[in-house]
Length: 96
Image (cartoon, rainbow, N blue to C red; front, side, top):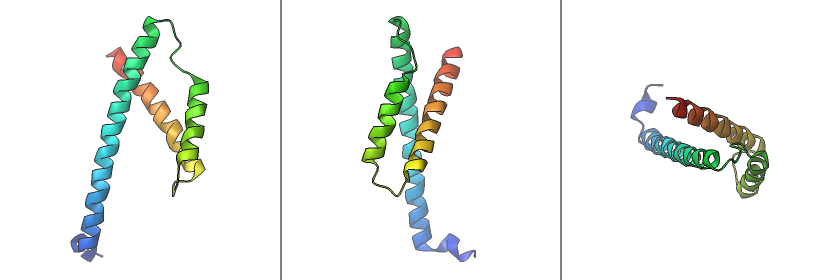
C-alpha cells in the first residue's frame, strides 16, 4: 500500500489534482468578488439581489455545455452549492 506514495504516476496525478484544486479556489474567490460587486451595484440601484430566473437559465446553460463525466444531477448539485456558498460568503463578508 505504501508503494503508492512513491509511484511516479500517482505523484504526477496528485500534483495535477492539487493544481486543479488551487485553480478552483482561485475561481471561487474571483466569483465571490464579482458577486459582491454586483450585489453592491444592485443595492445602490434598488435591484433585488437574488434573480431566480437567471439562476435557472444559468443552470440550463451549464447543463447544455457540460460534456461530462459530471452528470446532470452532479452539475445541478454543484451549481446550487456554489450559489448557496457564494450568497452566504458575500453576506458574511459584507457584515464584517
